[in-house]
Length: 184
Image 1: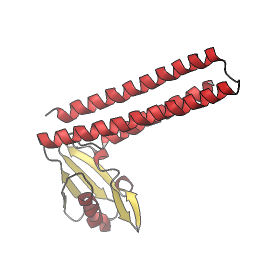
Image 2: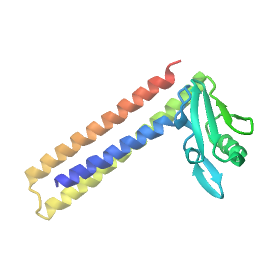
Image 3: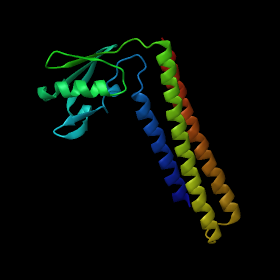
Image 4: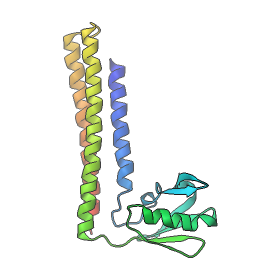
């Protein structure tokens, strides 16, 4: 039964790690390579993440420079960035692409905060689903006589503590990102 709890905790940690990755893609007014790393680029007919076909750097706080390893990809990368929902317009000189990160408007900040809250809520739901699955396993184990009623209560309490801790971690990460987005 302890293996079940450690498995549930591991799945909850994966949800938290996924949220951290998702939060990096939210633009907070500062240029960060994570902003465009996952943009899908058609590379020989296969959608490929931008980070696998180009070097992405942030030489200035409001500028990203993308240098493809294959110069023929420059127009393809430009199209992919324009199609993405980043709201950025690429400027190319034939060899590399520059992305100027504009100052966020108040309206865009509020929209990003709404997106942030949705992503955080999705991960909270994922954590609760992990708890629900673990509880179902515990209850079926108790019906089969593998776990006593007292042990079941103790394991349920332990599982609830893990869930509360995971949700608190999600809320902390969300609050930190919201503060970052709303700061001018």
